Image (tube, rainbow, N blue to C red; front, side):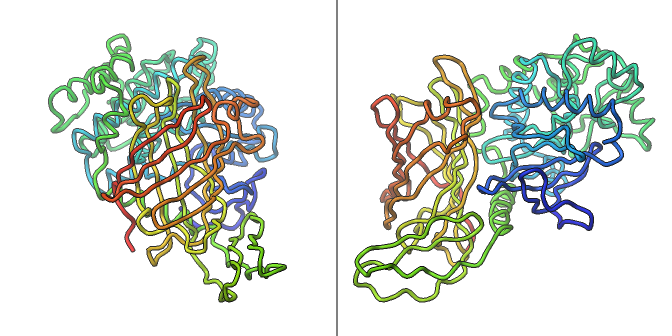
Length: 506
């Protein structure tokens, strides 16, 4: 992320702008944060496009379409203002590097990582195409890498799969896409279908496997000609992955495989199985961990003076104030606490695939703890696990706990996030915000209460009815693993065993 420049907004809608993430053809992308602490990616339209009535109409239509896209392998559109003098759209922020950046820095991906990458993107396309949408700009910079799998972003130019939309685009003479990663149909101005996205997926596979796109030329014009008429360069790619790349890059859309076929080939047991076996190299994992910690420091603030309890017999905890760090009161009989040190905020990011026959990904916000020694160092790190067989819910869990530089958890925990839930009995899915209030901390146990804040459900009271209020307990075992348990809404207890994948460097 880059610092804000002169002329950059400090606020967009209700979001405070923290810095620049990059620029695209439509506008500048900023990192933003809500008053409640949720971090988002904000795309603000370039001023020269705002006065274009045709662009405005297309932007309204495409934001409405992008709001429909959801699922584990895509970043959801959360908010937008298409009528503002400076139109903008907010999507879920993914604290992971782009595929383009990772390959440039660490080289081509190993075979297992390639399979997980392409299978996850193919599953994303299954969901997108199921809504009769196409992405139209799948390229390495629009694929983000996370510990839980690849995430496809930037649906800013996604369009409906209908002849009216594609023909009007072609008639206007606009070619949408990125040279070298476009499909032949895009280059030739032909009607687009789902197979266009599959061609672009093939270009991403080739890039991740070889370190460069499958079409190379000295100019955009020559590059576009090669895309339309030349053969792809696949380097040392071998075996079924090479065969798959060749099929995806077929000139005739009818000769390309469907996304469902790609998933069946690469991940017959599901992409989550490939990801769960570890799909990223240690240097990439370390890079993601550093970015998570850096994100915490963006909004650091001094700790306010500790309040004095009205009587020495009643422990006091100040109310949580957005943008500040709270501290615990002085227990009965204890000497007054010294002035609190300035601490780095500790973050616990909980991402899960939670379902009655579906999935959830969660990052939760924690309020200040009631015990002054914070989260013990033994709980710090990136954890993975899943619910025990026979549990009332199926949950593949990722738990990130990052603390202060001295190796302790610190006194303050501030996380924002969401759950992507699918209810198995109805098939309904939605985006839900979750809040955890910390109740108690000991050396071997952390107790939390989970709840849904007002307005936290994407569909009325659906999120609250599905998740409800429950107590979550993290217990440290003798072998260093963590047991996680909570009560579900059906009178049962859900249990999961978590193992540490890596720990933050002190």
